[in-house]
Length: 211
Length: 277
Image (cartoon, rainbow over all chains, first blue to last red):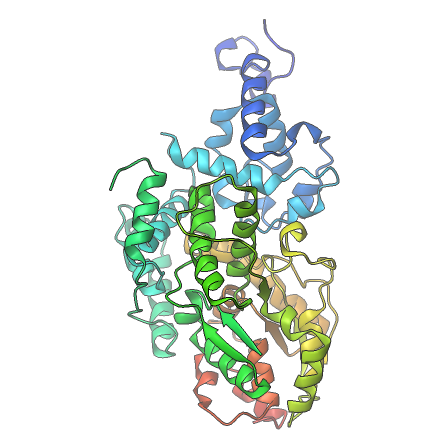
């Protein structure tokens, strides 16, 4: 039961049927799951591309916002979770605001990002994914987030520092940090919130851990 | 008048000059700000990117603390404002279990909208000692304060006016432009510097094309993005003022003048040229 709607890239290589993704069985399941979990009517999208046109960084994305919605309709889960779009999205809500059919595109992307964070798929934008994780870790540790502590924790994550040195941005960022420190904007220490224990308990509970 | 104040993490670190100027302005206006007791981080982008539950319960803790105080919350950081409102909406829906006792009825006010109320504008006009009538500014709102309108409650999300009204009350010449709520790149600069540079530089370029000399903002992240991107610029800098800094300047508030030094894009030459310093 091959379906006529297929990925445009692999459609030309018609003989390699294994690589083609099917809609129907997976599509409905995945679409229903996303719609159920987010409460967004994804089926209402008629591909007017208003979201992509409004998006300030659609040029940097591999799958454009309107394609994200289409892929959800088709049930292409792996392709979505492997994309850079879900990590690049700034949550600026332009797409959601300007959608004529009230499809909450930003919420869908956000939900896919959460799914990707829980999956075993390596994120395409590793530096951004690691940053989000570090932020949450720092938050749980002290209840409030201090920029200096956050950046220190971020750079001590595996591969981050190495990648920064390799593409030459590390020197610039060190200079920037020095400038900010001199100007008194970077505070080396900040008071912790007294509620750390409460927050940690709540956080571990959300992850199903007992503390 | 008394309000509970939720500063947020930025105002303790990178934007401590903003915090200082807010206290100075509200003192002049005669409005008491009481910091929410033992507040914690709202979770910002990270919590809502990784865990929906955390994005609701982290702001809920602060809402619960404000409930006890029984005062309206005023929120200068637009991301915190957005997160608090979002959490409030989810609390009302009763989807998640919240470990703290919270009603979700406390009003969360965005600082600019509070200051732009007609009664407060009148008060500001009375307090202005040194009108900034030679300063040409554009107002930049960013994303989280105005969008999504269903959460923030902005009816004029395409052309918001609050900062314009406040700056005009301080005497500044406010120029209308089209990039009021275009995204500046937010926290993406930490992983992908080039994206934030391309977005922020476009905003600066449009500022110059509009004929403005400075940008007025209310979001700490927008300020740092637009400010830091000017680090290696050879052209004369475009200072990025917080709205309360502008008010403080017009109130002729005698206090710590050190706040000028915290800007990367130095505002001193511009202010001296205009005779405001």
